[in-house]
Image: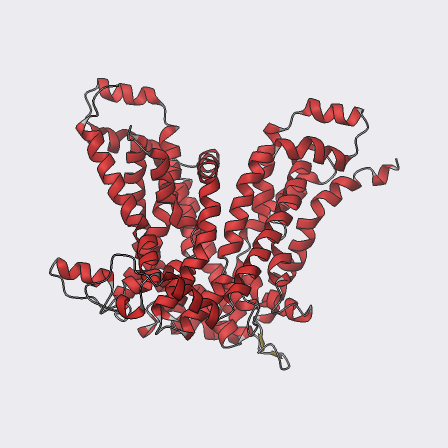
Length: 293
Length: 275
C-alpha cells in the first residue's frame, strides 16, 4: 500500500467529528466575533459599528442584572442542593433496603424534560390554587406570590434546580463515599470518634475532590439556566426581570428581537463571565490542601 | 440477619420520604392530567385521579399537531442516537487503539472543544441553517449533533481497557481491514459503553429545547418540547389539557430511562469518580 495513504482509514474514522466541529463550532465562533462589531437583524444589510455593541453592553443594566440573577440563583440552588445530596448519599451508603429503587427515584428528575416539569411546577407555584400555597396555609403561613414577587421568583427557580440535581449529585457523592478507604473509619472508631465527629473530621475532608466535582459541574450548568425562566416567566423574565438569566437575555435579544449583532456581543459577555467563573473554580480545586489530582 | 437497628430504620424512613417528595411532581402531573381544569383550579387542591385522562389527551391531539411532534421527536432522537453511536464509537476505537501521525494532537484539539460555549455559536449556526435552507427542518437538529466530543472522549477511555491488543493483532494477521476490525472486534466489546451513551444521547435529544425553539421557528414542524411550550402559550386557560400534553411528553422517556436505569446510573457514578 502506498505509504501516504496508509493511515487513510484512521483519518476517515475520526473525520466526522472534526468536519462537523469545523462547520458548526469553529466557523460560528469566528463569525460571531465578527458579528459582535455589526448591527444586523439577519435580513437587511450588515452595518459595521465598531465597539458600539460592547460599549452598550458595559452600561446595559439588564445585562448586569441578568448576571446578578444567574449568580444569585446559582448560589441559592447549589448550596441547599449539595447539603441535600450529601444527606441522601450518606443514607444510600448505609445498609438500608430498596437501594436500587431509591437510587432510580432520586435520579429520575435529572432525565425528565425541563420544559415539562417547569409546567408542572408552574401549577405548584400558582398563587391561588397552587399546592405550595395550600401547604403553607396548613402551616398558617400567608400565601406567597411565587411568580410575581422578585425574590419568590428566584426561590421558585432555585427549587426546580434543586429538585433536578440533588439525585444526580447524590449518586456521584455515593460513588465517592464507596471509594473511601475503610481503614480510616476503623482508626476513627478506635479513637472513640462519634458518627457526627467522624463525618466532619473524616468523611467530609476525604470527599472534598468529589464535592468539588459537583460544584464545578453545577457551575457549568448553573450559568446556562434558561428553560425554567423562559417557561415560567416568559421571554422577559417576569416582573422586574427577576428571572432574567444571562442565557435568557441572549435568547431574547438574538432570537426574539432579532438583534444579531448585539446578541453576539452578549454571547461574548457571557463567555467572559464563564471564563472568570471557571478560573475561580479552578483555583478552588488547585488549593494545596487537597482536591485536584 | 440481625434485627434492623433503629438508626437504619430512621435513615430508611427519611430516604423514603425524600423519594416520595421527589416523585410527587410526577404523581401530581398524572392527577392534573386526569382531572378537568375546573377541578384543578379548586381549593383545596385535588390529590386523586379523575376520570378525564383520555378526554384531555384527545383534546391535546385535536388542538395542536401533537402526533406530528411525537413523531418528529422520535425521528430526531433515534437518528441522532444512531449517528452518535456510530461516529463516536468509530472515532473512539481509532483514538484508543491506533497510532497515526497527529493522533495525539487531534485528540487534544477534541478535548479543547469542550470549552466552546453553545451561545457563542448559536447565531451563526442559525444563519448557516438559513443559508442551507434548513430552518424549520429536522435536519437542522440532527446534523450538528451527529458526533460529539463528550461521547468520543468517554468511549475512548472505555475502549482503551476493554479491547485487547492481542485480538486486534490477530485480526490484522488474518488480513481484516480496519473497518472490518472495528465491526467484528471493536463494536461487540464496546456494547456496554454503547448502551450508556445511547440512553444519554436519546434523553438529551428528546429533552433539547433551546436550539429546536430557535431553528424550528415559524414552522409546523416542531419537537415535543417546543410543542409543549406552544401548547402552554395557546391554551394556558385549559390547564388540564396542558398537563395531559406534558404527561404524553415525558412518559416515553421515563420508560426508556427505567429500562436502562441501573446500568445508566452506575456508569454516571463510575465516570465521576474516575474523572
